[in-house]
Each structure stands twice: as structure tokens, then as C-alpha cells.
Image (cartoon, rainbow, N blue to C red):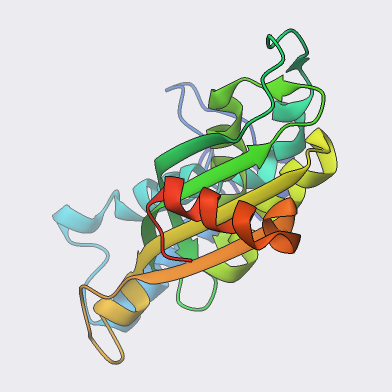
Length: 212
């Protein structure tokens, strides 16, 4: 395998390396694969407008899939215990995210609502969004993404309850296949009191603006 400088490289060795221009190094095998896809789609990868496309696409995909280099749990390591006795629901609503479906590598674009009922401590609210993005920036299915976010918060914060609701549109459905745009898929995962206690579940869903 050769990188764009002409030297033999292993993908793992160049995964996080940058070239003289400060951009990620793209192995030639990766660029060649994208040129093959362009050609197979019916265009000419040697024409002017497409000459640099393979490396642009490769670098874009490194960014889209940055979550593979992230451990979302690390964002929940620092907690705060001085919360003035606060013991009610903590909710972060309408967190925008982008992902890509693992079946067609097409965009998944949506928003997430993440809530937890603290037991002894809370976490900085930005960390909930970082957990979401850590999992979303991988090849995904929405159902697994929902479960991974909820499980990560449950396992690391050990709260009384966790609720995650994700609403998203899928380009693999809107732009191909059935070609039905404007359809939103909703998935949820309830844990702890939000799963076991109907009143708590209704309360968190009401705060989220979702129906019980």
C-alpha cells in the first residue's frame, strides 16, 4: 500500500498522520478505490473537476468517522457533587447530530433528547452532546446509536434513570430505494426509573415534547 507521497504505508500507521499541508495523509489504495467508484458510477475521474475528489472524499470520511478514535465514556469521567441537593431530571433537548448508515453509507441527520435522573452527582451538560457525537461519528443504525448513548450514560454516571429519544431522517430512504423524503424515524431507550415507573416515563417524555 502506498500513500500520496509514494511511500509504502500501512493504513494503521498513517491513520492519524498529516502531510506537509497539514491535511490527513490519504493512502493511495483509498484514493484509487474512490476513483474506481467514480468510474463505475459513469464519470471520468481524470477530468479536471474530479482530479482532487478522491482525496477530498477520503479526508471527509475520516472526519465523518472521527468517532472511531473517541471513547465516549471518557467525557463522563468528571462529575460534580455540589448541586445544592438537586435531584430532579436533567435534560438536554434538540441536540443536532449527523451520522451515516452502515448499510448504504448515506447520511442520517437528526436530533437527540438525552435525560437522566441523577443519584449523587451530575455531569457538565456539554458532555452529553459529546457522548452522542462520539457514537454518531461512526457507521451506524439509529437503533444501536440510541442504545449506545443510553448505555454509556447508565454505566458511567450510574443515575437513577436514563432516557434517550432520537429523531432522524435517513438519506438511504429519502434519496434512493423507496425515495420517500420527509419521513422521520423515532427511537427511544428508557432505563432505570424511566423504564420501571410509568409516571417518571411520562414526565420525561413530556419534557422532551414526545408522546408517552
